[in-house]
Length: 324
DNA sequence: AACCTTCTCAACCGCTCCATT
DNA sequence: AAATGGAGCGGTTGAGAAGGT
Image (cartoon, rainbow, N blue to C red; front, side):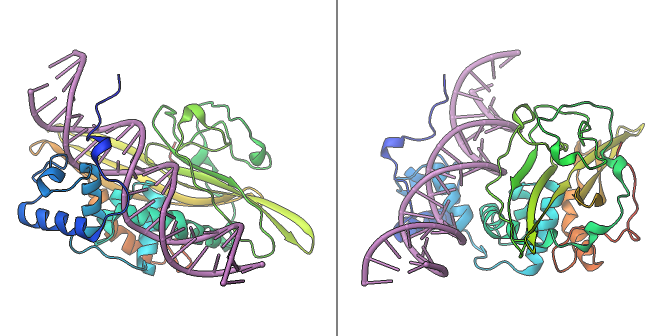
């Protein structure tokens, strides 16, 4: 049996909000607040709308201090860095960008920034760096991918998922084939969020919050076909150490990088974030999220992310380690 | 000017999480 | 412990705008 609908679908209005509806909702919330109950709010406010619709309208459009209009370069960098670190968790990104909503960021990423980023990625000089951290991908866990063709000429072990725990936890996988001519323009189609159970692409798996994608490119130089594959990834690796007093320190690492199997090169980087479990307070203080904006600013200011939205960290400045 | 295609983004849908009963 | 229901989240849709032919 399915769950009961949150409102009477037949009697609620759908579609764009009128100025009159906006005014009613705004007036009501400014006078009474939401009361912690969105479902009951529309009736009280005199609106023929679903409570969820009211909530969305308020959060994404009507509430004070919403920032509309173009995203700045700094915001671009924050979004890219966060995407590399945490994947498509738009609400967390929104928390780091005052005035921006998760919906805004999601739309912006899907329609503009993703393309902009990929255009930057495929022209990176870092792709020509030597492959140094192949062990990052190594693990003893076997997993059969439907197709390994794109890895045939690489040292990457495609039977080695980034995470040893391939499970039902969702991952964020992006795969596309694209052709480009001369200008190396990429187009990235809408990206499905898929489970390990129905993966269809030869991709590696990252842990809970990670993502990994691949882009096959074909370019034509003076009529000669040239193809390569870029792999970009970001993921978390968490560890926790308990203390005798019941507190626990944990930390995780995030990676972001690009592998180019055509040139057999990999560039990767990671940042370490940490947190602390406070026994007295009884909860985790996740400094990784609280401080991520500062981390990102620092990342940017130290040229770890350059003006072309590269994710790569200057290898002389960042400590490296194996994940497995 | 008319038509077609592509892009944008507000809004919806359906799912998970979690508090309450 | 199980059922229920609201909040919140991310993916997707589709109407209107913008751009191209």
